[in-house]
Image (tube, rainbow, N blue to C red; front, side):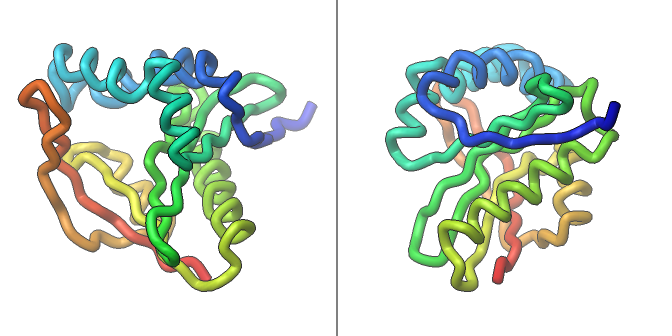
Length: 168
């Protein structure tokens, strides 16, 4: 049997599924970088089903990745300006990392942007300065544009590089 990836555009009915996937991948990704308190705060802040529905209603498009029919990752993209898109989230479950799932999902996010915006544009994303995914994004052709420390509430900050990729 071939190991096939597929991506589908999520609907608000998928909010609970996205939360389940995030509950498995997000803490694993940030366990060595963020405190347990910040992890708990960010999970509620970003991944409560009501928050995911609000994000979708505000314009974020979620893509759910599956391999051989099993959901294994997700991404969300939002147009922020005429020629600027933001890749808010891209995560693949640990068991599916290393089998090109992230590369596939990243490519599908870029393809989605090309579909909705055929003119040249830029995709940005924020990545924690201590997150090893930084190297993945560089490998995918992104470059560091700037960095920032962003307050997210409860005294917590996101300490990020803002990376960009020209699409066109």
